[in-house]
Image 1 (spheres, rainbow, N blue to C red):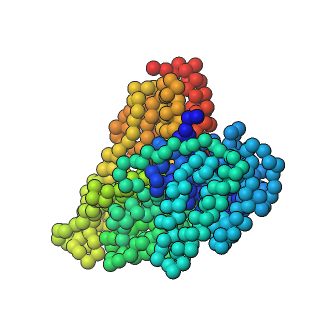
Image 2: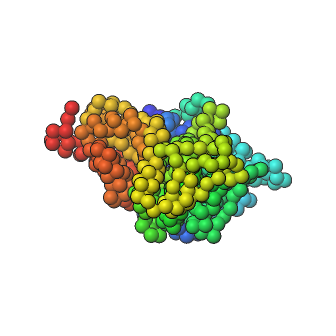
Image 3: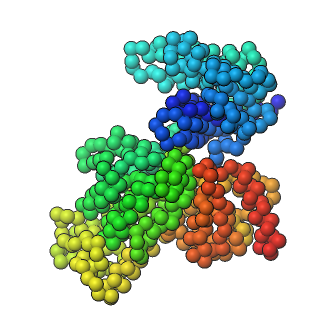
Length: 572
């Protein structure tokens, strides 16, 4: 029998039952021995309870999406079984907690009393180890994989470490034995082919935080809001030392004004929020654009509008991020599509803020924020970190006189000026003169030209039809692209995380296309509308369920659109 190269497990139950913990533990164990892994989590917005499910995908090759087909459903309660069992295909297995509910015995349902067996080890928390042991045996993992994971995870220098390790390994053994004696199997999972170089398992929000620290962030102010809160928590724990400051504010309005104050004082500053918080920041963002103060604003998108879907994923804030303030303003946007890109997007966001001297939107989304994935460990020595162009001349400097970017004075140094939110003249004094408003508007928009050098991806550039996702939809779209082109479809691929301004070369390539298909998670087709404004023949493939795209759905919808385009004469 051919060995499996992919293994997808969905854990479903109620918040507080260890659903997320089990999924992340399985991913960590797999990544430690060299598999490629990705998790996906979705849960309600309350602190405890409510339907929660997570999915772990383990593969011998790099993972692009969280997986369409579920090999194993781990159901912690009857509601989870009722909801998710239809997604388990023929040949899949349902592993359920027989202490919570009962199912008829058949070839695909396996009941195990997770917690009861776990408690028999003397460890009240070993239930998840019973689950992991059972899962490992379904694909014939060597015992050493999980045993070594337990030893590394629980060896923390405590007096009772040895007992904790012993009981957890016993829990693994009990789970394995349940599967062995009842002769359940999915077939052997191929051994891992470890990726070259050192890997780290990290979540999207953690990667953004690490990238920001690598870029030299000195000042962080934020207010808790899902799904951005973990960035604030990470900074509170890790951004410390001389010259750094982290503060949890009383509101998003306080946070945004605080970081502009820090930016004006010469500090690299940032905040992170979600759509509702970004709405509250609108007026201050306009001030930052007008006063030309460098800072980074992270928007972790969630379902909206209003409170909407606080813990679900969506890509419906593009318009808001592009034009978050009233009047003529348009902020730079960087939107990473993978966990690895989250790290580098943060570095680039700070570089952009310093280079063009103004606020930069770093736009991500819930599916990336909570996704854990193994990525190559970044080489900090290779990072290019840009510094502010600081004015070092004599007083009498006209801060806003140049047509584009000019050196920025720092308080206490030479070049005193007024950072004025009203329209102003070359030294920052308020003015209502039409000529000055024209001059300063053209200066502010002209500065964006220095940001049009972002990197981009292009495959089969001569094809008249291309697919161009943005943000977290990159992975499912790329997997769909590979399936379509391998089956003979004529289709190009374009992608960048530098959305505004688009890289010059990419913009030129897109304008030559007869059709650009944009998979995006919103109702309005916001990014394709932006592309059309740039002269690109773009159409969206939309979804607004609060969940990411399934690869199979994208394959069908893209195929249908290619077929329709062919009938309309959109061919080479």
